[in-house]
Image (cartoon, one colour):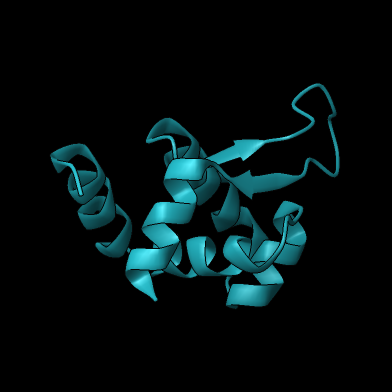
Amino acid sequence: MDDETLKIYGYVISSSYREKSVKSLNKSNKIPTELAEDIGIRSNHISKVLKELKECGVAECINEEKRKNRFYRLTPKGKDIADLID
């Protein structure tokens, strides 16, 4: 495993919200409200978490042009991180 992946892994697991979000997105693509429900946090926190995961290349939005019900999924790098967490 390369250093970059290890750095991102460390960043993800340093926040329980980020870690839980990666685990949840590894099961299926989700909209933010589903993700917030699944990991048990308020939906106003989830946008910050998703922004952080997008910035480090772990998650991506499938339908960015939409204003509501944007679907998020893990990138290939995100799937590697999810495998490390499990």
